[in-house]
Image 1 (tube, rainbow, N blue to C red):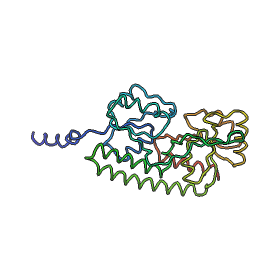
Image 2: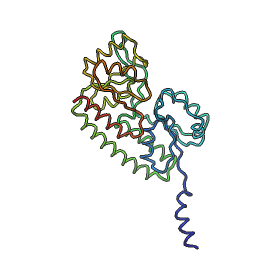
Image 3: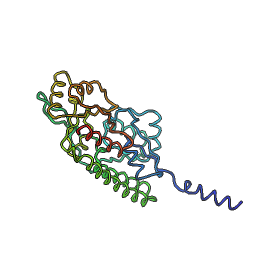
Image 4: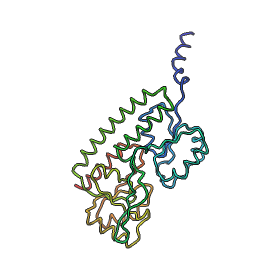
Amino acid sequence: MNRILVLCLLTFLPSLLFSKVNVVVSILPQKTFVKKIAGDLADVTVMVSPGASPATYEPKPSQMKKITKAQIYFSIGVPFEKAWLPRFKDQNQNINIIDTAEGIKKLPMQEHHHEANNHSSSTLDPHIWLSPSLVKIQAKNIADALKKIDPNHKTVYENNLNKFAQEIDELNRRLLKILKPCKGKAMMVFHPSWGYFAKDYGLEQIPIEVEGKEPKSKELVNIIHEAKEEGVKILFVQPQFSKRTAKVIATSIGAKIIEADPVALNWAENLIQIAKNICKANR
């Protein structure tokens, strides 16, 4: 009988000694990053569900309940946060809101430039998770916050951070190798999500959007002309946006349409597939 009691204690004691850190993040890739560092030490809730837009998302009542129990919210700078982070704080005064973009110099959001409108956007590009080098900074910010709130597992978080950093370095080497033959090639996108990725790997991103909106007829003609001049062979569309205009452009220039979701959960695999699609289209 005593032996059975001891076995039961050994089985359940670890879960009695500590509780998991309750974490909320804005987008799916962040869940990947947190789990890489925290593993089973954290429960992670994602605000923006698959297929939804981080620009216009509104949390569901069930998610707001999660906020009331959360210890950390890892923000990243996507548009919906501006309106909702203060409300999350009102809902839970004890929640720690951690900006994972801390230490990152963001680029201006790229806009389509044409003859009648040639200016830079004042909006900063939030898509920092699409650059492996910038994810290393975000990962450190995540680990630092976890160590502060859960110091008993400091060594676990540090070891996992080091391991994840090595994985990111390997991913970067692989992407450089895949994209080396395609350096300087242009990729057309509806929404300019891939600016950091393009900058890292020597690509050119050409957005279809004009000031965040679908192009008008005259603007569409200019975009098609530019795409032909640049020799665009691939056009990326997102599940969060309409494909109608993209299909018109692709048909006009003979480019291949590929769906690319910048907020996919399988972060590393997603970037590798994007790289392969770019090079395959430009052979």
